Length: 179
Image 1: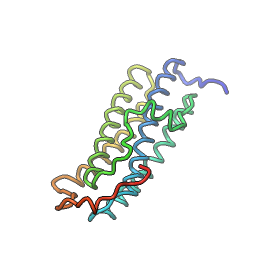
Image 2: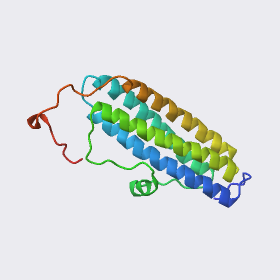
Image 3: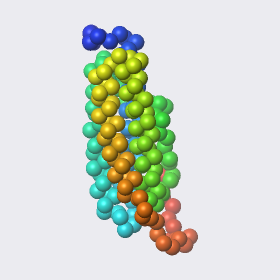
Image 4: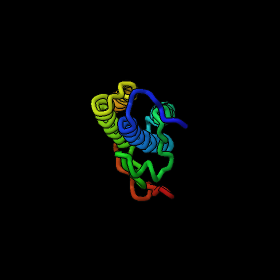
C-alpha cells in the first residue's frame, strides 16, 4: 500500500502514530478496568454504577475503534496485543484488587484524569511538534469526552460515602478467585 501523501513527513506521521498507539493502549487498560468494575460492583448504588459503567465501556469501545482507524488513516498499524498495550500504556493493571464502590469510582476518576493529561499533551505535540492539526482536533474531542466522564464520576462521589457503615467480619469477606 502506498504511503499517504497528506502533507506530513514520514517522521511527523510516525510521531503521531506513536502518540495514538499510547492512547489506544491506555484506552484498552481503562476499558478492561471499567468492565471489571461493572461486573464486580456491589452495594446500594449497584444498579446505578452498573448501568453507568456499561455506558462508559461502550463509549470507550467506540473510541478505541476510532483511534485505531486514525492510526490506519495515517498509514500506521495499531498495537493489537495485550502485551503490546501493557508495554506502552501509562495506566497500569491493578490485578487482584477489588475496591469498594467508592474506591472503584475514585480509581476510574484517577484513570480518566491521567488519560486527560496525556491527551492534552498529545494534542499539543500533534499540533506543535508534528504539524498534524487533524489529529490534534481528533484528540481534543476524545479529551472532552474523558473530561465529561471524569466530571460525572467525581460528582457521583462528591460529598457522599458509598462505603458500608460497618466493617465486614473476616467470615463475611470473600477472596476473589482468579483475580
